[in-house]
Amino acid sequence: MSRSVLRGIGTIAAAVATMAVLVPATASAARGSLRWEQCPDVPTLQCATLKVPLDYRKPGGPTIDIAVSKLASTKPAKRRGVMLMNPGGPGGPGLTMPDGLRAAGMPSSVLDAYDLIGFDPRGIGSSTPVTCDLKPEQLVSNVPPYARDAAAVAERAKSVAGVAKQCGDSKTAANLPYITTANTARDMDRIREALGEKKISYYGVSYGSYLGAVYSTLFPQRTDRVVLDSVVGPGGLDPMGSRRLAEGFQDRFPDFAKWAAARHASYGLGRTPQQVTAKFYELAAKLDGGAVPGVDGAAFRMLTFGSLYSTSGFPTLAQQWQSLDGEGVLKQSEQAAPQIDVGQLLSGQLHVVCNDVNWPEDVATYQRNVEKDRVKYPMFGAAGANIWACAYWPSESIEPPVRIGDRGPSNILMVQNLRDPATPLGGARETRRALGDRARIVTVDEGGHGVWLTDENACGNNAVNRFFVEGKRPAYDTNCAADKGGLFDSMTPEQRRDREKALDEVRSKQRFF
Image (cartoon, rainbow, N blue to C red):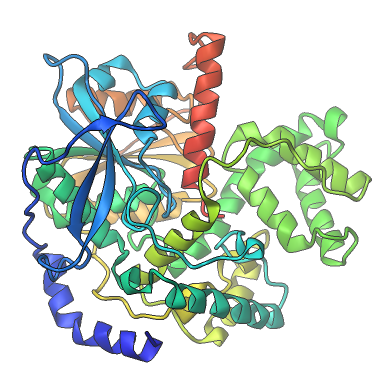
C-alpha cells in the first residue's frame, strides 16, 4: 500500500481516533478465557494466547494474537491480585520477564502478593509479529549514528528511507499502522478482563514506563499499584526522547570517567576524570579520521553510550578504549548468544516509535537539530538528533498521541536514577509534572539504567517493595542517597550467577541501540 493511500486513511480516521483515545473500545474478552499450559522454554511459567482486535475502532474485525505468561503466587492468603509488566524497548518481548525478575531477586513478599503477568506486546515475539525484512547489515541500532556534518545527515536519510520502505512493503504491512502504544495499553486491558480482574498493578521499566503511563491515562480506574521505573518523557520515544539520549550520555559519563581514573594503573586512560574525558574526545577524533579500519568515531560513541547502562559494563568498555588507543584495534568482548531476535526487535520498535508520533519529514529539520545539539551535548548530541526511519514512515498515525494526564487515583510511584543514560532525569521530571498528584517520584543518587532489582541501592529498592506490598508511598517526592550496594550479597554464588544472567536478558530487551 502506498504512503499516500495510508496517509489518507490516517487523515480520515483522525476524528474517530481522538474519541478512541478518550473513550477506549469496550473490552469483550471473556473472563477466565485464558487456557494455561506450561511455557515451552521456561518451566516455571504458564503460557496462554489471547485474541484481540487488530484495530480497536473495529472490535468485530480482524484479530491478532497476544502471548501471555503467568508466574502464580503460591500463597493464596497473601495474594493481592495481578501485576502486569513490560521490559521496555519498545520492541522488547516480555513473556519471560516474570521469571527474569524472580531470578533477579524479587523479594518473596512481592512474589506472594501477586500473580506476575508477562506478555509479548502486539507485533513482538510470540504475539502476532511484524517485520521490516531487515538485512544482516541493517541489524544495528535504530538510534542514529553521530553525524559529523549536514552531509552525514543527508546520507543517513537515504539509508533510513530504504528501511521505512522495507517496512511498508513487508508481508506484515497490513498490520503496520496498528502497532502502537495506545493499542498495546488496550491489549493490556483485554488481558485484565480475561484474567477476571477488576484492576491490575503494573511494573514498567524504560519504555515500559511510558506504556504504564498511557494505560494509567486511558484506564485510570482500572489501575491498582503502578510503578514506573527509569522514566521516559511524556511523549515516549518521540523526537525529543531521541534527543534526550545525548542529555543522558552527558549525565552518566562522569561516573565512568571517575571509575576509569581510579584505575589508571590498569587501563591508562587518565589519572583524573578530566583526563579520561579528554581521552574520549581524542579517541573520537582519531577514529573520525580513519585511524582504525572498521571502527569510526560514530561506532566508538555508540559503543560508549551502550556501556553506560550498567557499571558492570565499565571494565569491558575500558579495555576497548585501551585497545583502540594502544594497538589501534577494537578488542571484541566475549558475549553470550542473543536471547532475542534482534531483527524482530528492531522492526517492532520502529513500528511503535514511528506510529505513536508524526515525525518531521524535512531533512533540514534534523540537520538544524544536529548542529544545535552538537554544541549543547558534544559527546552524543549529533547522534540523538539525527534522522530516524520515522521521517519516511509509510503511514500516518491512526490517532493522536495519548496526552499523559493527572486524572485518576493517586497510585503511581516513579523511581529514577539521577544519572540515567537512556531515560535521563529531565524527561522523568516532565512525566512527573504531567501526572500531577497521581504520582510520587523517588530519585536515587546512582548512575545507570534501572532501579528496582537492577540497582543495589537499598532505599530505592525498598521504596518499590513497600509500595507493592503495603501500598505505602512517600508523602512527597524524595531522594535516596547513594549507598555501597550489596543489597543482594546474601545470595549464594549460584543465585548471584542466575541474577546476573537474568539482568543481562532483561537489559537486552530494554535497550534501543
